[in-house]
Every structure is written in structure tokens, then in C-alpha cells.
Length: 583
Image (cartoon, rainbow, N blue to C red; front, side):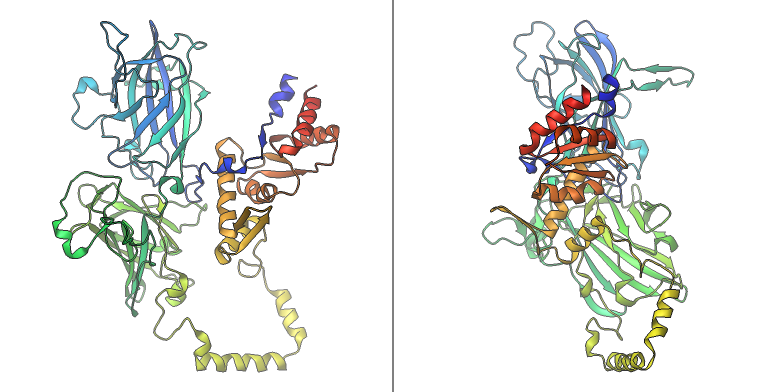
């Protein structure tokens, strides 16, 4: 029975409150495995507790933790105290009045830990500490994408069976945005000695995984994109109110550029932005300018401008999606790394500043910008300046998605126009082909279509996920579903809700080819699962609620469900079916 239970471990998730999946939209198509992993390694036992090394690994390709650095918090399960720390410190000591003689470093039930600053004395340091909480992105610098501290815990138990992992782990980096799962017991970590001749291992290791959501980090976007080109005088600005609008009822929300010179430079980062008054009200603007056209090459200038008086961006990075990055020939004053999120297709580039030269983006002002130029070689099969091909598809700044101008506003070639119906040549061309279609026999067209080879233009796969993505893009503000009296969602809202559910499924270990069963009538939650489960790569198994418990148990056993969603009105049926499986 134990083998059967381990093989068909089923989790009952009651759907009476579907809003429980609003934790995060952590899935990122460009960095699907990116996360922050925290390892809690118990190195040795002490008379009343243990000595542990806590290591934070930033496995995110292009999202780093900048100043003022990370803050790690948790809740002790018992009456633990922190006797001492190396490489980090608690922000508050708490009430330690009951201790006589040796006073603990921290007595709080919910401590908050921060990294030490550079220049800390060597006897208070350990490896990978003391950078002020700044952690690089994994693609930028793996060596500095790690942060560690040592902690001595007392009153916690002195064996593997009596010690308890911390609960309710929180990570601020430096603000909100990260959601951390529970501490899981994993295989003990192994360590290699300095001479690489001996391996040691931890006595006990807990693993905590934290994922990021831009929607949890802040309510509005943080950057926008503007466009221009040498072949069109029009400069396409960031969309109006991309990151918010100027609110005349709230004084002090932005600074007029005319009096910007009187704004004092604090030199320290503040999470509350003080923005220069603009039509887009974004802290960061990325400008993409198609600069020059050569016979075999073309050149682009990229400029990043900071409009925030309260933030200096250290170790900033930019992720750009464009189909011509496979032909990038030369890059000036920026570092470059291809991300290749889609196997061998090189259409995504990560750009960041050169250390000690332009890796520091200063606060708003005369020096609050960095810029570079990119030289591309032309691919005769793909290259064109028509229909906005020379502009990026998507841009991220420090891991956050930037607001792009609408495609119909992109700069057009002088002999082209978005409104093609007004062109006399186009009208003549349409008339000619209309007459040609009437003259040619229909059979010839059918034969040509039969000989046409399938390609991405004429035979795209039709899937529920593709349908939902297109509906969210084209009909985002249209109603997707009415259910009951209060449940009304648009296609864009439905897409975001399904992404959140898919992210939650991935965070609990549901992946490709895993079976997920649903026992529910036709509700709005059932409708969204038809999209969310395939998004996570799992296989959806819908079970009819009119079946008896024995039949339901056979279906669950046959498909090998790892997860079972149950409607609140079908709980008794599910419990009876599972009891039959394991008896």
C-alpha cells in the first residue's frame, strides 16, 4: 500500500476559493528555470543547537539584486535564538532580557537578516559575503551571483529528528516581488576542500525556492521604449501614461525638468521613486534608433535614460528580442551574451555595461544615461526596413518587461504607409489581381495550393494555448467569460490568471507529461484549467462528476494523477474514490 500511495500521491485542492492562485506569475518564457535558491546547510551541532551556513544562489539569467540589497526573513517554529552570525547580521536584536551573561545576537521570533557591507573586518567574513546584499545575475557574473552567511542557532534541538526548519520565509530584493516556498529536506550538500583532495558534507540540508513576479513587485511597469530611424523624421515616444500618469492632486509625485537642478543628489537608493515629470512617467526609458544603412551592414543606437532621482542602477542589464541578433557583428561599449531561450534560435540578447566604465546608471540628471551602438550584418533572406522589422519585439530592463509602442505607430519607410488603402498603386495592383483571378480557372489555384509545402505562414499549429495568447493580444479588453453574478473576466485577465495557475503548478513540481485530474462541473475555474494545465506542460484529465466513486478511482489509478483538483461539491466523491484506491 505504501508503494501505491507514493506512486499516486494526490493533492486535493478545493476550488471554493479560486483566488488562492493569485500568489505570483513567476513563469518567464525567456528564463523558464530562473529562480533564487536558498540552501540551509547544518555544518555541526552545538550544545543547544547547530551551526549552519545559509547560501543564496541567484539562478536567474538576467535579474539581479541591487542596492540596498537583499533582506531574508523567517519565523522560528520553536523558541530558537541566534547566538552569533558571521557574514550577516539581524536588523533587530529583540527582547533578550531573560538571558544572563552571554546575550544572543537576536531573540526575535521573526528575525530579518541582511548582508554586511564591503570593508567588513576579515574575522567577521565568510566566503561570498559582505557585498551589501548585491547579487549579480547568473548570466552576467556567476562568481558574484551567490551570497552567504553563517549562523549559530540555539534552543533548536541537536539531532536530525529534533531540529525544525524555519517557516514563512520571505525575501526582499530589495523590495517585494519574490514568493518563497516551504523549506524542503534534500540530500546534504557536499563541499570540496581547498586542496581539492577531500569532500565533506552537511549534516542536514534544507532547500528553499523563491520565484519572482513583476506584478507582485510593483503595480505599474518600470520602463518604456521609444523608437526612431534615419529614414523617418517621426520619433515614436513612449506611450502616454506607460507607467502612470501625472496626478495633479498629489503634490511632489514628480519634478519639473526646469527645476531639476535644485533636486539634491542623495547618492543612496530609495524604493520610493521621485520621477522627472514626463508624459510616460517611467523611471527608465530605452530608446532604439535605427541609425545607418550600409551595403552589407546596418547600425542601431541604444540609449538608456534614468528619470528617477532616488535610484542609481548598478550592474544594470537589458534583454532585447530581435530576429537579427544571429548576425550581430560588433558591439560598442556594452557586453553581450545570447540567451537562446528557443533552442538554436538566437533572437534574444542580453546587454550590460562594462565594469568600471558604464555599468553604473546614475540617477536622473545630466549623467543619468548610458548608450551604445550595435552593428548588424544583413541577411538577404530576412533583412528589410519595411513594416517595423528593424525594431525590437520586446525589451526587458533589469528583468522587468518594458512597455512598447503599438506596432501600427512604428516609423515607416518614406514610400510606405500604414494606410495602404489610400495608395493609387495599391488600388491598381488589387484591381489587376482581381481581374487575373476571374480569368484563371479555379482548378489551377487548387493545384498550386496542393503543391505548396507546409510552413509557419500557412500551417501553424492550432492549440488552446495559442488561441488564448492570440485572444489576449487581439481581443484583450473583450469579455472572456460570464459566470454567476459577479465573475466577469476579459481575455487579458483570463490569460494572466491561467499563467498564475501554471506558475503555481510548476512551483510544486508539476511538469511535462505529468497527469493532472479535475473533478468539477462546468465552472469558471474548470474553464481556466483547460488552458492553465497545458501551459505547465502537464496532461489534463477531466473526470465526469456523475461517475461513481469506484469508476473515479479506476480513472485516477490508470492515468497516474500527480494532482487532483476537486470542486467543493465533489469533495465526498473524491475522498471515497481515493480511499478505494489505497484500500
